[in-house]
Length: 32
Image (cartoon, rainbow, N blue to C red):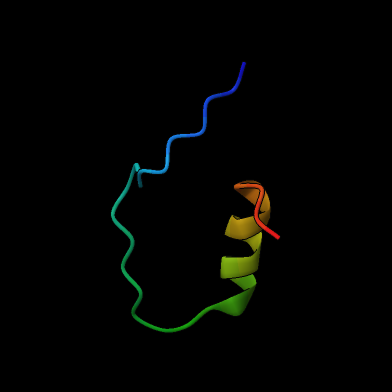
């Protein structure tokens, strides 16, 4: 089974907004 752990495994530096990358990450994490 897959257990979802809501903890960042790496530090995220948001220097500038990147909607494309955000969408990709959301899709990878099973977001809407």
